Length: 355
Image (cartoon, rainbow, N blue to C red; front, side):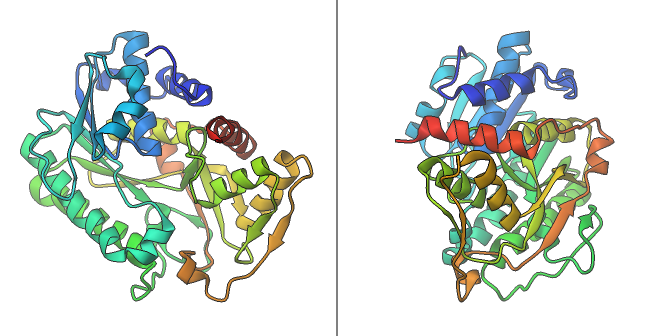
């Protein structure tokens, strides 16, 4: 791999490949299957492992599980001819017979659009539960050395009277709201992972990610950070449909990928690990102001246009939650990117993709 189309992603990938926090010998001469490999986290994982191979001859075999072959070929064009890279066309919701021998699985495939959680809740739940069960069955049949499932901070729901949340905490989720298809699906799958670990000895671990962004995000992405970035790039106001009271901490993509590789190698089977940067806590409204003040060149302002029923638009109820990362940090993880750096690199990367 010489270079990627996005130089900011290239820099991130090289930084991951050079990380001393990741126990790279654990992955030497092993085969890693990455589901959802054309997604943001999945693709950076693929590129990071390929970059490590190029730099250090680590001989990590990478299998990228995809549904769309043409999309995968375009995305991974720089590494298509690598002897250690293979595209596997399959759907986690059906048949995984084509995968072949593997040592590790990083399961990133998931529905990720808030709009889909509301408009396609059944598919959201089914992909989470049945798709992951198929991946767990693959892990069991292959007797893999390790599997990592990507979960979300949304499993915590709305905590009562607590902002800093450890892996042992839990909050309220209204299971009769279709928007809960995502968060309840993630909760059930975490239990499914723990059950496979207990009953079938599948060495699966769980990473609970805060909202993660950075270089590599598609220009058309509709998540809040991308909407804010797109607004300042185009010189538009940032329009909020809620009061923006939800508060959470975030994580840069490269930091998250480092965390995933650390958890898979060093985490305890059947346990979950929060993945975030505890220095990035901010409310949605304050984040909008932050982006306007620092990146809009005074061309954008924050405008409130409150929706009558924000839940129908895919928005979660107001929640104030910061993930406690002490458990992850005990494995050697330390985030490197501040919120300012996260948005700077996100916006620069998105500008490269603007048509």
